[in-house]
Length: 293
Figure 1 (tube, helix red, strand yellow):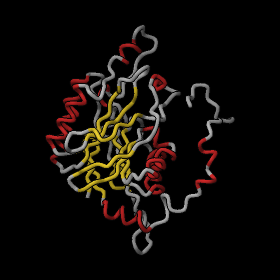
Figure 2 (tube, helix red, strand yellow):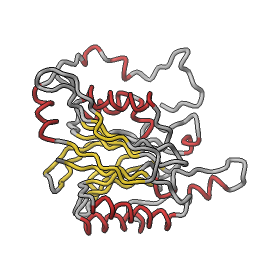
Figure 3 (cartoon, helix red, strand yellow):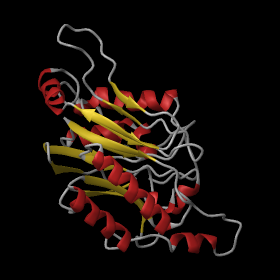
Figure 4 (cartoon, helix red, strand yellow):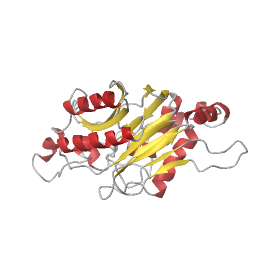
């Protein structure tokens, strides 16, 4: 049984010291609840904050808040992961040549960074045009007290593209961690449920609490039918709108058995017919002048 703590919080604006302290407190609460992994909402160090483009110097001041993997902020949570014996998926505005990135680093229970992923599907129709998109999806082997698990990550808008989770599945991901920062309503939650089912992988998403967003952090198992063929509700947990640590418990033995015997995932795909999926061409009515390829 692998326990993922969804850290549903509101941020303290761009006050990184306050966000660090609050994140520390929520991680400690997660550890007390028996969590193996703590998952932050998106871009936590600056509270998913951006800038007022009408104000001179605002963009530069915002970009100056970006931090590196060797920063004191990241180092604090690496030390905390080791202290608590719990993996931590920490999100932050990452310093990067040119434009900063929207990043998550997964630290194992020994405090080592085993995966760093930058958001590929940046929201270029909005302020995320000020970010450098990530250049690929990655999976790592995470050592937990419950055993090793193959873990991947995607961030917010990534989950709205089936290719994101599919590439992670093809790399062996059994569990996909998803930091988030937007309203989670029935359609987005339905999309997320489908990502688990179609890729035979567990999915866990942490969102900001109200009033910053609407909460509803959620986790789904891919195990959709019992042994008699009866449909199961794959939802493990769905939060309300309030600040809280919500614990999602994944039965990894059941998930692995499901992956061995059922037909989704990579069993019966026909990749030779999918060439168009990798085409950069965009036709009407989907042409957008601000889209980046």
